[in-house]
Length: 417
Ligand code: UDP
Figure 1 (cartoon, rainbow, N blue to C red):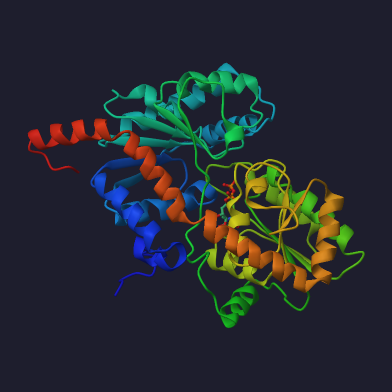
Figure 2: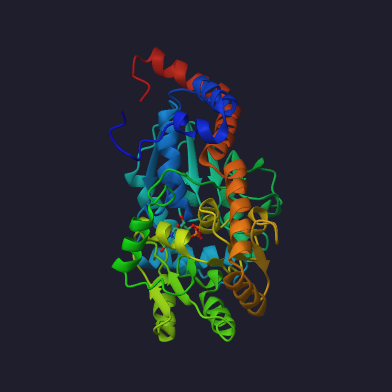
C-alpha cells in the first residue's frame, strides 16, 4: 500500500495508457537509471511550470531517474524585469535599458554563486534562470525549456536572449510554431497533467459542494468560470465582458479564480483592477487551493480560457480531463488541444465567447458531448506519461555523455548521487 496519495508511479497509469506503453516507458527509463537531472525554475507554485515540475519530477524519480528541482531567488525588481521579458517574448513591448539588464544578469550571477550543480543534465525553465549557463564550467549537457508563446517574440528581447540560448545544447518549446531561427537543436514537447493529483483526481458531489460553499460560490445557477493566473494575456476583462453580453440572454454566475505566482509581480495589480466588477453574480477570488480548482472545473457549465496568447494552457487540459465544456481563445497551445466544435470551442472575440456561453448554458447535452470528447483527447494525448516519455527520449540522446560521467564517478569511488 502507498504511504501517500501523491505517490503516483507508472503502474498507476496502466489502466489509462495500457500495459504496452507502460512497459516501453519503464524500458527507456531503465537504460538511464540514476541519471541526475536537475530542473531549475523560478517558482514553486502558481502557473503551469510549477504544476508540471511538481508531478513530473516525482514520476521521473519513481522511474529511477534522479530528478531534482531547484528554484532561483530574486527581489521584486528582478521579477519585475523578468515579467517584462516574458511579456516581450510573447510579443509585448519592452524598453530594455542597461539597468534592467544589470538587475537581470546580476541576480542570476548571485544565484549561480550560491548553487552547486552536481548532475548529468541541467534543464533550465523559462527566461528567469536562462543566463545561469554562463556562470558554470560546463561538465554536462544543458537544455533550455521555454514554456511561453514564442510565435512572435519581440525582436530586441529575442536577440538579447539568443546569446544565452545558443550556449545551450538543445532547446525545448511546446509547439513547432514556436521554433526560432537558431542553429540549436529544437525539440517540441507539449505539457501534460497528472490525473491523480488533488487538482485532477476524482471528487464526490459532496466534496464539490462543500468546496464551493467554503468560498461562498453559489451553484443555484449555471457556473461560468475561468481559472487562471491574473495576467492580461489571459484576458480576464474580456471574460467579464463576454459574461455580461451573455447574461442578456441567460442567467448564470461568473467565477474568476486566479492565483498570483511569486515570479509574477503584475498579478496583484490585475487582480485589484478586476475587483470593480464584483457583484452578486460575479465572484472574483484569489486563493491557492487545488481542490477548489478541481471542484470548479467539475461543476461549471462552461469553463473559459479566453487567452490572447497562451504557451500551452494547462487550465484547459485540466478542465477537459474533467469532461468540462471549454471555450478557449484561438491561440497558441489552446488550438492544439481543442478542435473547434468537436471537443470544445475556439473563439476569437468577446462576442463569439458570449455566443458560445449562451449556447452551452442552454444546451447542457451539447456541453456533455464536447466534454466527453475532451476527456478522450486528454487521455490520449496529454497525460504526464507522454511528456515524461518524450523527456526520456531527449535524455537518451545525451546517453553517451552520461555514460562518461557515470564511469568517471565510479572510478573516483564516489556514489552516483
Ligand atoms: N492555477 C491554480 N490556481 C489558480 C489559477 C491557476 O492552481 O487560481 C493553476 C492551474 O490549475 C494550472 C496552472 O496554474 O495548473 C496554470 O497553467 P497554464 O499553463 O494554464 O498557465 P500559466 O499560468 O503557466 O501561464
